[in-house]
Length: 168
Image (tube, rainbow, N blue to C red):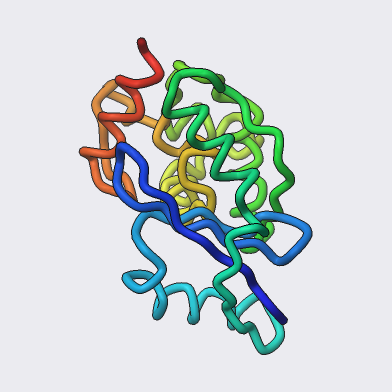
């Protein structure tokens, strides 16, 4: 299966955007060269014979929306994306997308409650850490129960930037 990708520069560093031709399937921090081994391993799990092709035209519309977000002109994304993970991860990622509005934060416990499994706080943390849609599915808006910032796959510096950006 052909997977199309391109990169863009952003205030939080390079982002790699991957499409299956119909939907966006991943947005990742870092350049494709930095992420190639990780993306290869991930894609082999979810796609038959994945081949990455650098084809900017397939993701330009996503780059425009992300740039609008960073320029303060967009708080919601309109492009189609497709989750690839376990059913539990899908449920968590959908809850992040559906329940945490721009500029808000929620705790891991809040997300566990939102998916109807209030005792699954640690499992929710694990699923949040595997979020394939940096920025768009807002895992940066999830904080610890004490109100403090806790781990973020992209790094706490990026999480701090994104939260400050959305607070403006």
